[in-house]
Structures are given as structure tokens and as C-alpha cells.
Image 1 (cartoon, one colour):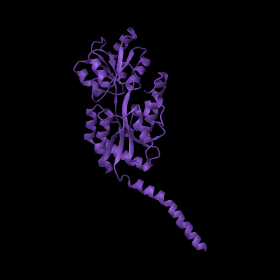
Image 2 (cartoon, one colour; image 1 turned 30 degrees about the vertical axis):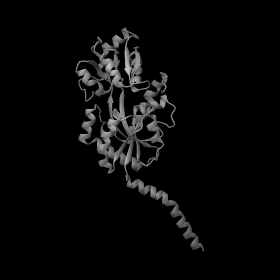
Image 3 (spheres, helix red, strand yellow; image 1 turned 180 degrees about the vertical axis):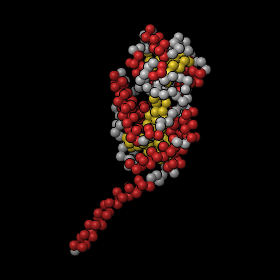
Image 4 (tube, helix red, strand yellow; image 1 turned 60 degrees about the horizontal axis):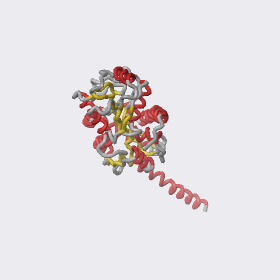
Length: 329
């Protein structure tokens, strides 16, 4: 009888372990079906473009299709929230950007935590904003622009693509660092702000390189500086803010992969490996460069590096957002 009892207990323990063994086996075999990347903004925008360029090549590294699903609304919080609630199995990823994974945590009451409800996978690409103004502004360099703004308080205007957007916060950050004051004008999108800048209806914008470089080179607007630590590969003729006399005014729009909290470490490692391989592909790199995006150095493509960067962005921007009392619309 003792033998039979021991045999029964052994079989019962083995049966109880089967689900865990099965989960481990599935994780080790990952991926066995398509991976979905949720882009929290409409098709055709910068985030969507990066996702589709990366997905096209990433299927080679994963051996499975990578499907893009656009789930837009509420400044990215609807799509990000969907991923936060998804099964942590590596088959649903978030294309995180500054809006969805930084700003929303300070402006909106969310059903998830932008930091603790995601596992970082890898940074993808980023661009630093430009400081541009209408052609009629008398200043020919950044120091001259700041001096002109100080001499004309509350008379100039800056366009941005909506309350709580990075363009909006850039203007507040700029005023804080320079001691200037100017009106901020929200638009339905950056395209409309750039149109009014060219026509002289507003004075300044802080746009992405792809939206401004051709206009600057054609002499239709003035480009004073790139808001980054290094010059943009897309516009190497434009000095950095450090070179132009406004050190520390760094504003980058970035994209990164995040998985739901609890995704197994080996699945994260597999996704990271496929991402790094994708970003090393010359064709992929050129496609991103053509849009004004820059790819981080290899050591900045680890999950740990993304985690540290994400925390630093929150620590930098949340105080600025909260001090300005900006609330999500």
C-alpha cells in the first residue's frame, strides 16, 4: 500500500508540473506564430513608419510575420493600455513613444502604469527636434533669436500639434531655460503648424527634421539648432543647441519596443536579438535615415539601457508637465 501511495503522489506531482513544463517549452520554442506590434497612433505617421520598416525586416530574425495594428486615440493611451493588459507571452508588443510611455503618465489618469506595467525590449530609433522660425524673424542664429524674444515678451507665437504634445512641452521647456515668454498655439497636427509658419502666421515651431529641412534649405524658414547632443545626420549643417549657446535643451522623439509585464526573460532576449539584427541591416538603416531617424549605438540597444533611458525621461519631463498643470484632453 505504501508503494501504491508513493506512486500516486509521484504521478500527481508530475501532473501538477505539466503546465509549468508546457509553458517553459512554449517559451523556448518562441515564436511559433505571428507577433503583433500595437502602434498607438494612426497609420502614416512617424511612429507607424518606423514600426513598418522594422517589422518588414524583423520577420527574418524571428522566422514569423510581424503584424502592425494601429490602435489610436487618447494620445496613445488606448493602444498602450491594450498591450499592458495583453498576455505576457511575447506575441503582443507596444511601439512605445514619448507621448504614450512618458507624457501620458503625468497628464492622464491611466488604467496602467507607464513604467511598471511594461518590460523594455529595445530602443529603435529617434530624432531630435529642430528650432525653426519664420523667414521674417530678424535673428540669424539661436542667441539672436533668444535676444529678440526677450526684447519682445508675449509678442511672438509658437505652433505645436496639440496640448500635451512634445511640441507643446518643448515650448515650455524652452521658455524656462531662456527666460522668454511667448504664446503657444495648438494645431490639429504639425503639418498645419508648418503651413502657418511658412506663411508667417506664427513665429516658431519645434518640428522633426523631415518636416522642416527641405523648407529650411529652400530658404522658406530659418533653422537655428537641433535640440540634441549631436548634429543630425539628416541635417549636418545645423548646429546643436550646445554649439548654438543653449546647452541642455535636449528634446528627442523616440520609438521603442515594450512587452507586457511578466514576459519571460528568454522571450525578451529573443525579441531583443531580432531587433538588434534588424537595426544592423543596411537597408533598414537607410530607410530610417531617409525619414530623419537615427539609430542608437549598439550598447544602447539592450533592455537595461532602454529601462534606464525610460526612467530618465520620466524624471526629466514629469516635473515640467506637472509644473505647467497640463492635463490630457
